[in-house]
Length: 333
Ligand SMILES: [Zn+2]
Image (cartoon, rainbow, N blue to C red; front, side, top):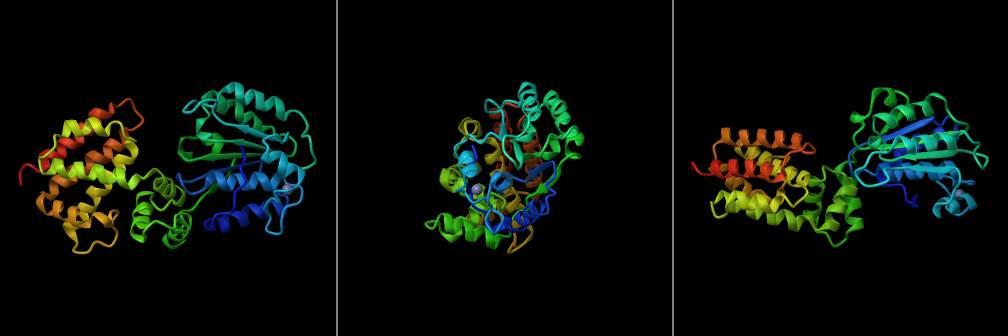
């Protein structure tokens, strides 16, 4: 479904570039939007699709939202819009889906103007479907534009990448991101919004998602358990049992950010680039109690653990190893 969206404040330059393609009638055959989660790749891809299919775009090049074709698109029944995504979550885009697409592209578009295909996420194409899809790109169909979205473009084959015009979305600067986040969530304190943006690595939509999910409360709970292990008041294996139910990528990122801040506290009186400004006091205190060499070893273990996510690694074992290491690190002092 293509939902009407507005241009996000940090996407102005990207939009001008896309708009120039349309104005000058040199829209690439395939456009690939890339960038970290939470930067608004889908929104921008949707804006491009809407603009390409609209009958009377506005002065800024964006779709009018009111013409019959805009309404068809909104209703999910525009005949010249084809949406390809995995049939079930975490499944691949199958070669059959791509064959179906090729069949449809062999027919003429229904309306004058562009026909648009959205492939989202493009990294869900498996080897077979990529090979079938490359045919679409080698033999361009009439007036057709293929829009692809990917968070992990490095996993895409070079043969595909080289046939796409890539549009990497930039991370907005902190001021723009934080102004936007506060507009969306006026009840957030400035301190909380800064921490949320740190945790989202400045991706505003991800920070907003974190705010909706109440991620700061969950993080506070995990931090309390992390502290309790350091004080030898909780057993690492029991905490690992709780943590294996949580999103491991998020928890590992928190752990890495805590340890990274601790390392900075070991070197500097006022570290300028901390992730966890709200945890300055406890992280500073912890850093003082532990041997620096040990903190570095733990940091390395965390980086290695992040690499192992997505493999067959057992989450309980993963967290046990880290937390036992943390427990022992706090033993000697
Ligand atoms: Zn329109």
